[in-house]
Length: 89
Image (cartoon, rainbow, N blue to C red; front, side, top):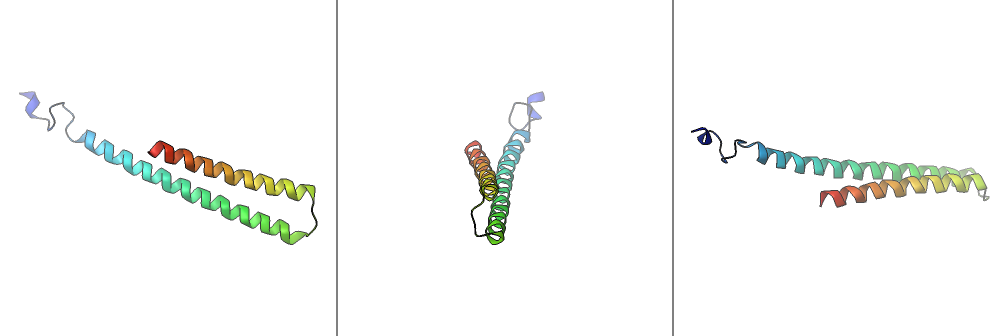
């Protein structure tokens, strides 16, 4: 008679269905967080590059290093976003 107490016959009730919904919500939250993080890094990238360009019009090796570093940070944030999208699909 214990099989009558559960809705799906396996003793889990509705917990399996809610677990799938929570997983989908977590995926959406991860994707939204990754997108927002990437946009924030892009804003920092733009701001730093603009300030370096404003400081001097001459080419300087340290300015090149700074620009390369913020571009690498943006690349890494986009790779994180790509990995999150692949995991969500």
